[in-house]
Amino acid sequence: MRYPNLRYGNPAELQFYAMAYTVPALAKQLRRDERTVRDWLNAKQRVPWWVPEIMRLWRNEHANFCRQLELNNLPKIARPPLAVVTPIGELTKPNLKEKKPQTLTDLRLDDFDLEPTSACGTGR
Image 1 (tube, rainbow, N blue to C red):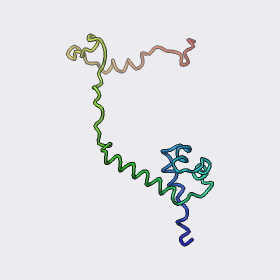
Image 2: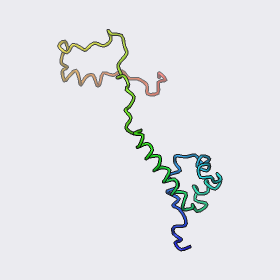
Image 3: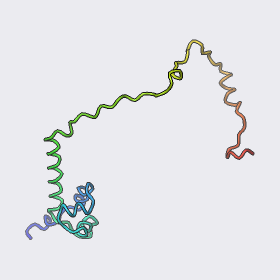
Image 4: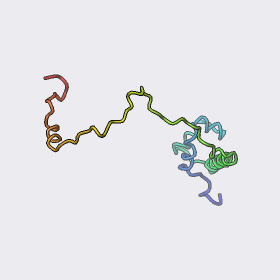
């Protein structure tokens, strides 16, 4: 062969394009046996030059088709805004005027006024 470096395809490129397919589906698309495709993906056999090339063309053709149909520019489905579902009486704003300021001693004592509890919950 005149250019031996062009005889085989890039196995990493094949694996990249094959991520979107199952092995049986890819074998059917390429009209090859599943074992052959699996050997290509596992790098047990060399990949023919045309396999990654044709998969690249499939991908470009699909992207061009989506671009022509403007499938990427479709608006998102309008969703209603999320809201809290609760009885009306529960959602009340606290009255900030009635709040008394805490003193520094109250804050310090709250940290140390805890009752001793067991760590493992056995009640000992």
